[in-house]
Length: 163
Picture (tube, rainbow, N blue to C red):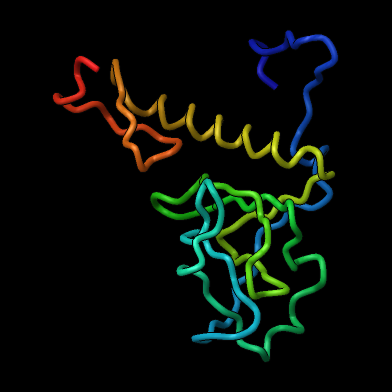
């Protein structure tokens, strides 16, 4: 841990993801088919607010038995993009998929299964971490929020200069 951040509020303590998680694992690379009963959540489908169903892919039924029970997503799992230009770092909390009883993550997604109560806190920490990294890479004095972008600002253009 950083020496600069050693003082914490009373009752707080430093920890690691491994200490609050019961499962941390990247997904597997499946053989895809056009459609099946087992969806695969990939990095493109993960958004800060949830899963965008139009980007789901599907596992070939012959491969279903190759996934151990722990690899099937559970409500409350954090899905964190491990790779991808423009998608790396994006995360969401899995809340199930309408019409599907099971789902898995592909190899570009890390699944973090916490002890329940820590999932939202960890998700917010990921958002803060990615936001901090994004801000540190951009040198600007002001930013403006686009009404359709809920978390990340775009660089201020001349039209927003005095906002």
